[in-house]
Amino acid sequence: MNAKVSTAVLLALLFAAGTAVAGELEFKDPSGDDKGHGKLVYPTDKAYQKGSFDLVGVTIDASGGDVEVTVEFASKVEDPWDSKSWGGHGFSLQFVQLYIDQDHKAGSGHGSALPGMNVDFAETARWEKVLLISPQPNSRLKSEIGQKAKAQGKDIVLPKKVKVRGKKIVATFKASEVGTWAKGWGVQALVQSNEGYPTKEDLLSRKVNEYEGEHRFGGGNDFDCDSHVIDMLAGAGKGEAGEAKAQYTALGGFTCDASGKGARAKIDMVYPQ
Ligand SMILES: [Ca+2]
Ligand SMILES: [Ca+2]
Ligand SMILES: [Ca+2]
Image (cartoon, rainbow, N blue to C red; front, side, top):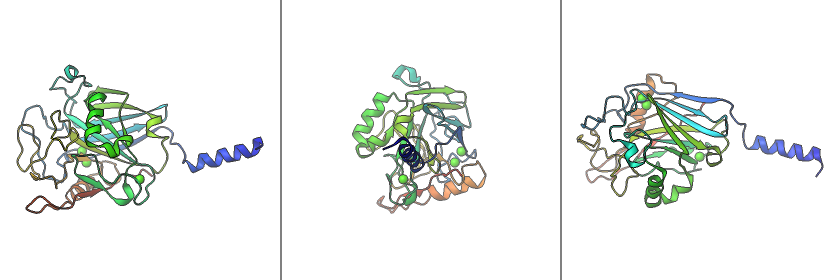
């Protein structure tokens, strides 16, 4: 192969792989919609301060050698359970799963969110990677994934660094584990609560019951047919008021019969233009 041909081949490969996005991707979410399908309420313990799970923004900076994800909440990120004492990252309450759809093709990728979220993705919005932003140390995340999410395990990306800055949590992931960010990729951020003592089905997420309890969300169903997402992106991810309603409709799309059987809610991603 001469030099000219190899350059042409290289260029073709680059275009086939998609064009890298320079700079940051920014998503906004309305405040006050931290109630899942519209009816969820926080647990009663005083640790769960108003706004703790109210996502208001997600920024993804994939311009460097790393992928830096910043999630912003309506209230200051606190550490009521002293995360440092259990190897954590300076916060205790939140658990964010950032799902990425890298091809927007029907039927391609994982169709279900991680165990405990109780939602599925639309056929054209199945995910290739999920980035975990949790107060738990990676050793704990790995052991939970090994027990509860084996089939999805190789596509679950753990952070190399996690920091708290006021109302924000900043998590840094290796680009080599996420992939080279390309135009057309979709994003969805699911907010739940970090549960250090999960049931054997749930991957470190907190139960949603019919009635709220000290450490249980209320407004849902005691069976596992209802969606357990507290907040997420919706619509165009610009923070417009209508996105709250779009979220309630999507997360409320499950069915539950008297024995707890039913169909899960199906959610979409946000595809930046
Ligand atoms: Ca919100
Ligand atoms: Ca996909
Ligand atoms: Ca939302």
